[in-house]
Length: 374
Image 1 (tube, helix red, strand yellow):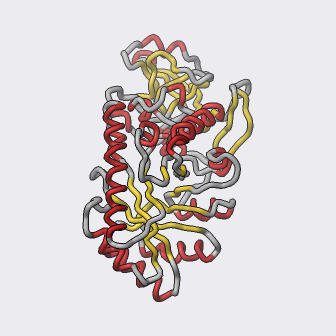
Image 2 (image 1 turned 90 degrees about the vertical axis):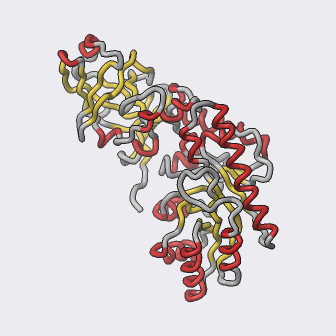
Image 3 (image 1 turned 135 degrees about the vertical axis):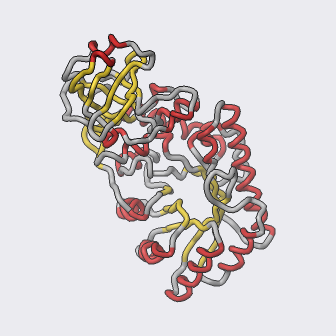
């Protein structure tokens, strides 16, 4: 990087990005499944376009704002991956009327009734996936629960079609080894396939059997019965993924550029202009074997500097210090020095910024904007 950026700024290393995308693409190729990437991590047209080899493939979104944006850019096959709320029915209907092949998610009888009523009243059709709980992590219906069939039967004839089932192995983010991730991947696949078989036995033909998280997508050994895989953070990676052993620190494609603005030598502190407003408050590595504070400190090439991390963050100030308590490292970073901070959680850190300053081999390529809001 030959030029100085005004900081803090979000950097995206496009070479690392492309390598990360290729890694997952190559992993899934033997299984002949569809990749439906989750774009909530990047929220960028330019990044999302790089996820596909020509054309515009199926995507997963976490907000209807994302669905609007990517549909306007030509992405038509869209899964809204959050259980639909009644106050969003009309918004979803507008997207469908405009030509989006929008798929919604249901995981309870009450929402299903409300959606069916809306569909009948407004003579509107919807396509839904039933969410299956594969690990008790968050939401969904147990894979062998009769509630799956009950919901599907309730929707029959209402204009709402159950076209598939989906699940997410959220507990894979708490794994302590690759072997444990592989176990979660087997559990994830079994849960959603079993749910699909239960519905098929009740007479429901499903076209989509969807699973995925970045850890399980990269380490699964068996995708039989699965039609598509979802993952998002694989394109950027972050310190949580590195802590799981899913990637190396050198694979992380996003970082926050910051500038040294002062020191507290007696405390071994270096003060920078990136606080939690630039880095986010996510402390996802705190529960891992190595706590990376608010992020790992790197030089401008993206290589970590000793054992420096951001140990504390105020709104616009970050405090860098040595994990080992070495007070001398503070004096080695003069005022004006620019550094890169690797994020704990790429989604959360990226969300603090309006866009990416895109780099290749240290040279600036341009600026890619992000969308925000709901």
